[in-house]
Image 1: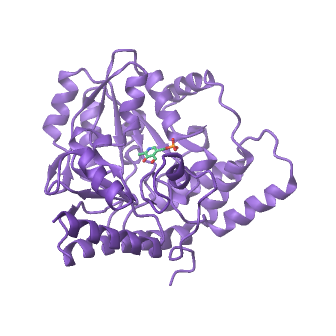
Image 2: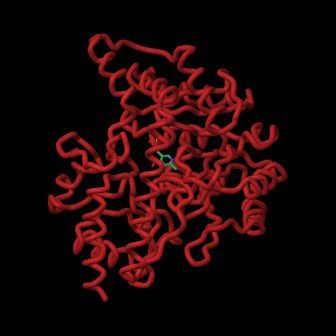
Length: 393
Ligand SMILES: Cc1ncc(COP(=O)(O)O)c(C=O)c1O
């Protein structure tokens, strides 16, 4: 039994939770189980809770700025967890990774430019590109029996054919759960160097790595890669702090950083909240044990799901979970039709997953399941999966 609260369900109804309170807002039955949006049901690191309680008690929460201790916490974290040595000057704080991607697109491309992504991938990439009147070019990941890879010839040819100058990498890859190997990242980075492509590396899930896998920060692999990369990190996924709206964007190339900062200054973003600064600093300094236990829990949840599918001969298969807390469920044996899958999972089973089609056409026939819930809630999920599968078959 873990020291932390990963087994018992934490009731989040009536907390204005997007994950839970949207059930009512969307007129779904109250017993719907939400395993969609990527936040976790667990209370964060205990030291963060007590630190923020102390801060709340002061009653004074004026305009704030990151202290040296804040920067040091980020620097220490990157060194100890990722063996990546960074400088304070490289850090730019933004209210989120998606806002940072938005700024990077505005800074480093013009209207009408083609921007490269690899679907199925986190859908706001395409949304941001298209909202900003750029053109999305996807070099879809290659899939063989739910294992995903990059077709490097196709990747390079897509860059050449579309005169790509900006590429958004998702590492680890949401939703398919791949942790890119060093070899793969070196190949990607070298192709981008060869063709003068700037890289927005969304590494928000980089702390959520399963045992036996290792994340490599792209910009840490070669000094030349650091020159062309905007690395997006945040404590939000790692420590379940998404509502605090803070992320650390790391840009070692001074020219790129100054351009990025100039563009973000036009957005009139507020000062970071004293709560988000304090929470991040404490989590990075004190959160290792909590995170290590969380990863064990996520792995167990994934294994239970895999075992249930196998033992009950359910008509699904799973992509290997190398990173993130999101399982990628292949439902193509049942249907490729997204609305049919929603009807089965959401309407019949009361299981609210993300429909794979939202991550691009190549996500059709898949569902994304958020594993970051309590053991006892997952018991019910598995029961419902078995029941609904028996009813289809
Ligand atoms: C790959 C990826 N990037 C960014 C985000 C969201 O980042 P933020 O909430 O900091 O904008 C998510 C959330 O799930 C994500 O999976």
